[in-house]
Structure formats: C-alpha cells, structure tokens
Image 1 (cartoon, rainbow over the protein chains, first blue to last red):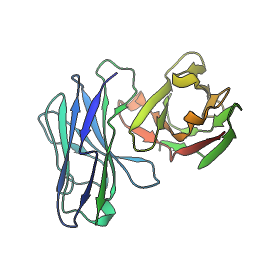
Image 2: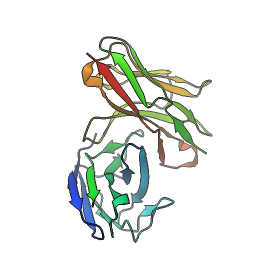
Image 3: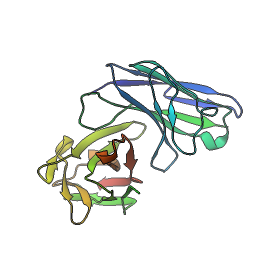
Length: 115
Length: 115
C-alpha cells in the first residue's frame, strides 16, 4: 500500500485567487493522478502528473487553469488558478504503485470552498 | 465507450441484515473491477478488486463482490451489515486492453445502515 499526505485538507478561498495543493507519497510511484470530486458527484480525472514533464490533461481541463508539477517520484502539486465558486470541490491525489495490480490509493483530499 | 453504472443513489439496510450495492459496467475488453469506500471527510479507500480467476472476491471489512460476465455486473455484498459500514461506495472499472491506465468511476451509492 501507500500512504499519501495531502495539504491543505481544506481551505476557503476568495474568487480570483489561486491555491496550490501538495501531495506527498511515502514511496516511489510510477503513476500519480489528480481527481476532482464535486459536491454529490463522482470522481473526474483532471490529469496524470508526469515526472519531469508536462502533465497529461483530460478533456475539459487545461494547464492554465490547473498547472501541475511533479519534480520527483514521490511529490506533486496541483494549482487551481483564478478560482471561481464553480471550482469548489474536493481535489484528490491518487497513485498506482509500480508493482501493484491495479488499485489506486488516495489521499484524504483537499476540500476547497470558493466564495 | 467505457462506463460504470450504480443504479441506486442510496441503499438503506438494517444492522445485521445482508447488504448489496449494485454495479454494472460496459467495457470493450476484459475489465479490471474495483470497489472503493469513502467515509465522511476522507479520501477513497480500496475495498476489493477483480482481475481474473474466481468470480467471488473477498475484500476488506468482510465485504465481497461477485463478478458476473454475462450480466456485466460486479455487485458488492456483505452478509451482515454494521452501522459503521455507512458510507459512500464507488464502483470503478479499468480496461487494460488498450494499455490505458484510466479508471472510470460510478456515481456512487450511499449506504445507510440503521441500528
């Protein structure tokens, strides 16, 4: 398994500001993902964080809005830029172990409220 | 296109009774299937998975799930529900045939176990 630490766990932000979420894993992992879980909804994949290169974004998500960094195999950040109330969500960091058989491990999530 | 359906938004069951949370899927190849649980203000936790082999898989906290290829279903079950099982449950599918790492999550089913 993997232990994933995410921070902040929650924050209240003002419209137009940006917030960076950090994700730290206790072991080296190949695949690291960022998901969004809007209130009462399922998980939507934002992007795959690639070590040392640009993240791979899913349809509907762009780098200008959700810049992602991954400087090494255990750490990644997601920034939510120029926030609006529609960005109020839980943002989840997730990893798949290099030798795992498929399951994902999730951080506790970062609950953002944009006023 | 891949998809996962959880037809019930909420399932209520009395403590001590058996529970079933339903999941059906649609993928082009042989799927990897997963169940996750999310407790309030927490990230998702892996419960169990089906990759290949025995259609009945056992997982954490006494949960099990049965893979039914003909019905394209992967229902989550537990013989005797506990109040502490009350949570949000997500079914997820991954189609490994195309080399993709992407997971598709269902919309979630809220399980409420009544004392």
